[in-house]
Amino acid sequence: MKFLLLTFVGVVHLLSLSSGKTIYKNDISQRSFQEIKEEIASYGDVAKAIINLAVYGKAQNRSYERLALLVDTVGPRPSGSKSLEKAIQIMHQNLQEEGLENVHLEPVKIPHWERGEESAVMLEPRIHKMAILGLGSSIGTPPEGITAEVLVVTSFEELQRRAPEARGKIVVYNQPYVNYSKTVQYRVQGSVEAAKVGAVASLIRSVASFSIYSPHTGIQEYQDGVPKIPTACITVEDAEMMSRMASRGNRIVIQLKMGAKNYPDADSFNTVAEIIGSKYPEQVVLVSGHLDSWDVGQGAMDDGGGAFISWEALSLIKDLGLRPKRTLRLVLWTAEEQGGIGAFQYYQLHKANISNYSLVMESDLGTFLPSGLQFTGSEKARTIVEEVMSLLQPVNITQVFRAGEGTDINFWIQAGVPGASLLDDLYKYFSFHHSRGDTMTIMDPKQMNVAAAVWAVVSYVIADMEEMLPRS
Image (cartoon, rainbow, N blue to C red; front, top):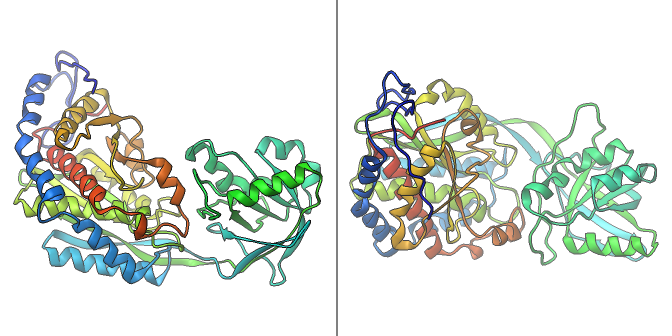
């Protein structure tokens, strides 16, 4: 691990201890980096106690078992569904029964979309029933469906070049998978770009790092002034097959039927619980994951695991009788999959206290064996976080990467609050992401134990340090 050596002198400014307000050169922290380093090192025994309890002690496998009970009981938890609200009520009760503090539900309004019955059948050049998943917020087709010839493209640029061919057709995107952030634009924007050139529907190759004939759903966005057309994901295999067919000059015809419907926004809640700080209770370290999921699989990986290691972090700290100086706040977000809807409303409600947030943390990239922590913040804060991560040497997870962003915490990060997310095997994650394969079968209790230990050590130490993390 590379350390940046800093000295807090002269014009350097930190955040104040009690108010969360920035200290400028008229009121400079007198602590040197060496003193901060020594303070962090003093948490070595606490970190080992957390690790031992989570990985080897009586709490091992607890987050996995809790998660399995929830997802086996309620199944997938799409925005606006009764199953999501049942999960929220169960979690509210669980947090109360555990004796966490300030357990409450914060009301929000969230989208409600249902896919209904759906199918896609290739009629030419041969009969082939395709596996599809409608994309979130898509409109449906007429009851008789849409039957049209296909135009296969590999990029938006190719679509523009071939725009005269697209009118009245179903556009099929066979975009290569580069990485999620680059490739997902086809899922999000594909229907709009196809509609702009007169297409009647769009089918998007699933955004996945690996496929065993499994479609991957997700949110898509319509645009004002552009006709809304039905849109769904197809498998990597079918997208590539149609691309080969088209290259041979075959005429491809598909009949698409989608019963998707959008309903008025539904009532829901963000779920909150705390361990109230002993010295600076108004200051907050926030740990989080989202409780909603898509309507396929069980939502175990995305993001049951992240939600449950966040709960587990507070459980571990409570089990050890620890109470940090500032408040540890657990938030289980709702409607993340629709674009962080619940998190945005939380931000609007709490942003007046933004100076009191030391760190916001979100786990939403799987809870497989962690590679380390992704972090966004000032270089001074990064150096402190690197020292905190060194406490996790017993489990050999000490790296600090860039880009700690997450859908639900980006609002805070963009406003200057330091943010962190858990990083692990993204190839595995995007193999199962938003698919029917997102079940407990892909979860590993031992890996969840380690992820929970990382989450608990980082959140506790930063919440208990004498100073808040410095901002830019």
